[in-house]
Amino acid sequence: MELLRKPILTEKASALTEKSNRFTFQVDHKANKLQIKQVIEKMYGVNILAINTMVVNGKVKSRNTKGGLVSGRTPKYKKAIVTLKAGETIDYYANI
Image (cartoon, rainbow, N blue to C red; front, side, top):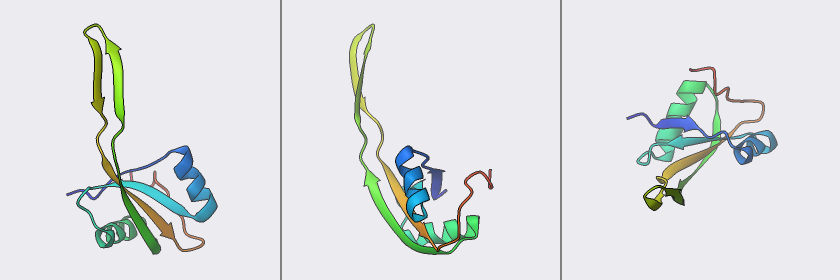
């Protein structure tokens, strides 16, 4: 089971990183805070102060096609916001 799916690189997440040294990841739905902390500390070699998790519900999307209006939902996912000690940072592209 791969706990970390991908980093979330949105404007809001980038502002959070610059302002308060917090990094955002999309994680496995079954992962808990302890597992997330162990994986991130091992992968990036950083010290974590706090982890906040949330389940983001999918949005309703619709589009027009030849066959008419098609509607559905994007999948829900779990998001983890990780607060690091001052002076530490995560380089998302270092472990590719």
